[in-house]
Length: 189
View 1 (cartoon, rainbow, N blue to C red):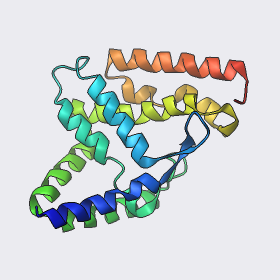
View 2 (view 1 turned 30 degrees about the vertical axis):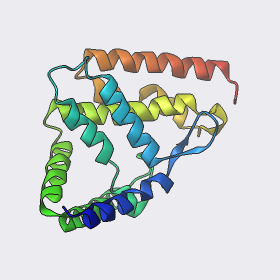
View 3 (view 1 turned 120 degrees about the horizontal axis):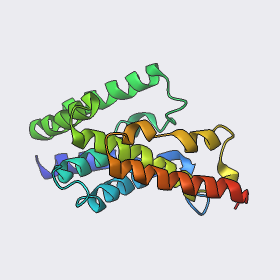
């Protein structure tokens, strides 16, 4: 890959810094997709010793690239995204990945294929962290920013994604305790 090709990839990825997500930060600012991706990568790095048999560098790579398609479409919350919107995002991402230098295109295609198939523990861990981070961020955001349906969503979301891991199941239960405490306090922040 040439230096210019690297810069072009980075210029596209930079869009995620300005692509806003549905959730807000603890101070009420809408978070960016890049911030979300950074934090799930950080979660993976911090969990390295909890999952010693996994290739955590691969998980971190999945965390970093999982929302690159939103460079082209913006973020649409999971609970609102249609199949047509998913397909459009996938098509735009695949076209971009195919246009990249061969070794980069191959690496990204391999990762995206593994993430889509969900046939490895690395892929399952990345997906669980992606979902858990969203619930954690909601717990950190002001209650006044929650939509009505998010009260139930924050109580139930991601339990299916963590079921393969006793550690992640316990983490999800701890997150639920935080959710219940936040809702019980009733303070809109």
